Amino acid sequence: MTGGDDGESKRGADGDTAPDAGTVSDADVSIRTARDDETDAVRHLLDAAMLTVPANLPERVGGGDVLVAVAKEIGTESTDVVGALVLDGGHVDAVAVRKHRRADGVGTALVAAAAERTDAPLTATFRAQVRLFYEALGFEVEERDDRLFGTLPADADVTR
Image (cartoon, rainbow, N blue to C red; front, side):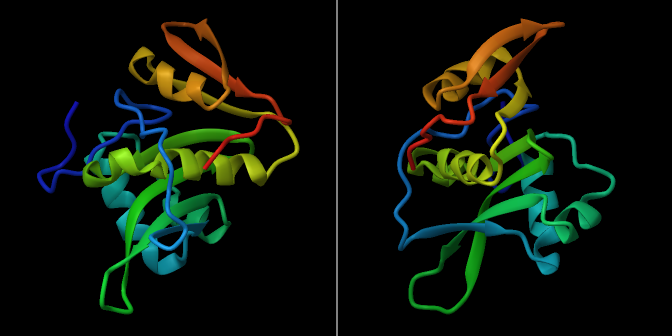
């Protein structure tokens, strides 16, 4: 699986390649709710990862249903969106992480932040290629209609 021509790729809930399950340095990357002005960055990440971009993405961002991982550029005040996770209630619709940040645990941090937002189990539907990622995070996985469905128990401890 490859992403766009800028080298971004990671498939999550809809995709083939898992975000890495490493760790994220809090000083380097922070996870937060996406802002309205980050909608295009989220769209670009999802598109580059060949994931379905929700038609109502601006509304999802405005409603607080999209988390982003942002990295501060060294020596500047600007930040760069390096990962995104789209939620539908307690279900992960998509996870996308820039290719050059795969080994940094950005995907893990995004899923951990999503899990912290709900007292119910977090769920995701994904392809077999990302099964190990979800299992490493503690998702219980079962096969449903040529896809995998994962449930993260509400009391699971997703490490960042």
